[in-house]
Image (cartoon, rainbow, N blue to C red; front, side, top):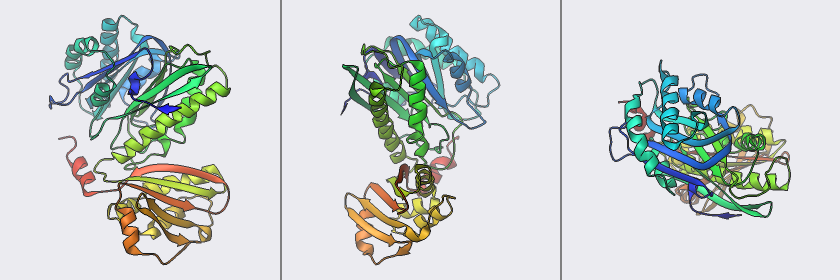
Length: 403
């Protein structure tokens, strides 16, 4: 397996585009994106567990209930959530697109992201679809731009791998910067592959993967109403279809995980107002489940996040987050250290502080990527979670987000 360029257009048979249609006032920002496969794809998806759900999720769930899709349309600037005619608008989006692509509206995945509770006018979308379709090409970057809201950077990744003696590719784009604390998947993520995979195994792969990737990301503790991850597999690599849990499925899972972990890190590192990517690695837990609870608790701690912003080696906040996590741990066995490309500083052994250089610790924590290492010394379970620091700018961004 190797890292490649191309995002959602890395796989054979996939085209993409992104345009400004007028949903957003800033004409320099694209607000409508399209991903299209030249042939129908197996499709799998996971959705937010928030009881308040965007209308596009309802429409998409109905459309791909047969396990297939061929196109994805997504607008930014308006979440199409809590609108009386939201379902109608989402359905119109799919019908208008289907008419231009000469496919069935039932084969369109619909997504929206942006402000909740504001009416969404179909007019700019209707007017923008012709340009969106005519400009289809190897334009993963344009589609990635089209789904951004408060994101400051595009997020795309792709890898090449072998399955059934054939070279396959899988790639994805994502948007996510704030309102990120998923309970299923996260934000909006669109993944494409030319590997032949049955809908059943595709869903199994996605549902399994998100438990250790997107569900382990947190920026601010808020679970969005529009979170969705979809995977489209068109089979253009011509490998024997993966319809069982075999070696080819394991190869596919590894490739999928490589892409999703890369996107997780990009999302966490681009958290609203963030200056640092935080990665909490927990080892030595009694079980993997315990390790996951501990890692997520540390990453979600506002006090830990604030300390990382200030480059303050306040390890007591890490231990505190572990203590209230509810996980079955022996606090008298816990070791904690901070690590970055500047080095590693051990700050806690057996649940108690140790002497360390504050100056050296400061150097470690001034880097852009910080590892918080927690060894529970109680078993073989391990897990990893991703987040970011908490800065003044997070409040500034969200204080006037709607207006």
